[in-house]
Length: 232
Image: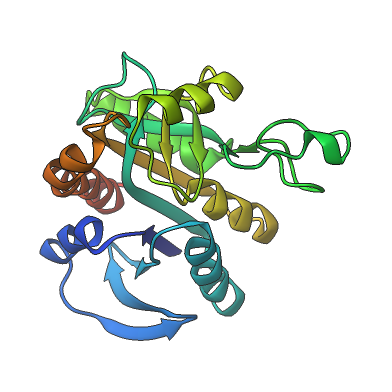
């Protein structure tokens, strides 16, 4: 089975190298993907870069050239809800773009790109299997809507604007919906796991710098354990 792990930032990717020995490196788009063999599976690890365009461009470059069976995206996110705290894990069930406002362009809802689904839902057997793994390990997580945009959210005013359109959104980040949109068009299942690095408020910048490595390590450890223990 061919599995791709995609992360936006070097701080989030570095921990995977603690678990995998150096493998073959190959360029797909503008991203260098490292190729490992893990538990009999071919694993492609790529640092895609930050933001929607980088995420979509580099995942598309990989999927257009390799027959990937599963995409796993990890990384950090900012909380939008009081009950979602730093170091919490979020398992997205669906993604939307919080910066897509196209309701005046036709029969579209907030967060919808014209002629695309309103939400990119991650309902697949592979995700269900990962949920079972988290449950068996006793890993606590929040599950629900995650929203994506090209801005780092660092004020209560920004949070309030997003929540006005997406009151149930658990957290906000900068790549997930783009990964999900690409996976949707290539008909490849996607598992997403975000760890909360900040509260998306005026302290977000300081909190993010302090916590991004911690939450990156947290997510990486779970993903690696999942890959090693499960038969695909």
